[in-house]
Amino acid sequence: MGARSNRFAVALHALAVIADRRGEPASSDWIAQSIGTNPVVVRRAMAPLRDAGLVTSVAGASGGFLLAKPPETIGLNQVWVAVETGGSLVCHNGSPACPVASQLPSILAEIGQDMERALETSLRAWCLSDVTQRLCPEMRALLGARTL
Image 1 (cartoon, rainbow, N blue to C red):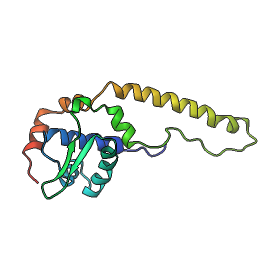
Image 2: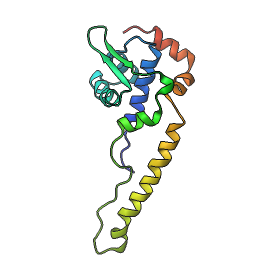
Image 3: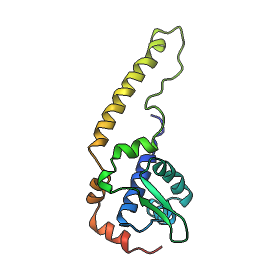
C-alpha cells in the first residue's frame, strides 16, 4: 500500500485550533505546537486553505490565522478539495501487449471517480463545527489555557 497523505488531518487540526481561539489570531507557532510540527509546515499547510477562502492571515507580532467564515459554514469537503491534490488511484506500468495492462488504467480511473464522489458525499455531511463540538471539553480548556 502506498504512502497516505496527512494534509487533510493537519488542515483539520489547524482549523479546529483556530476555531477554538474564537476570533483571536492563532499563530503558526501556536498551531505547530498543537500539531507537533514546525511552524513552517503549518504556514505551508495554511496556504491552500487561505487560497480557498477558508482562513485569512493577520500580519504582525500578534498576528496569525483566523477563520474566514463561521465554522458551521466550512464543509469538510471544502477542506479536502483545498488540501488534497492528485488522483486517488494510480496504475502501475504494465506490458502494452497484456490485455489486463491495456484495460486496467481506464477501469481504475472509473473506480477512482466513484471513490471521489463517495468521499465528497460523506464529507459534505460534516462541517468544522461538527468537529469542534465533539472535541473533549477538557482538552479544549487545556488548549485555551496554554500560553506559548
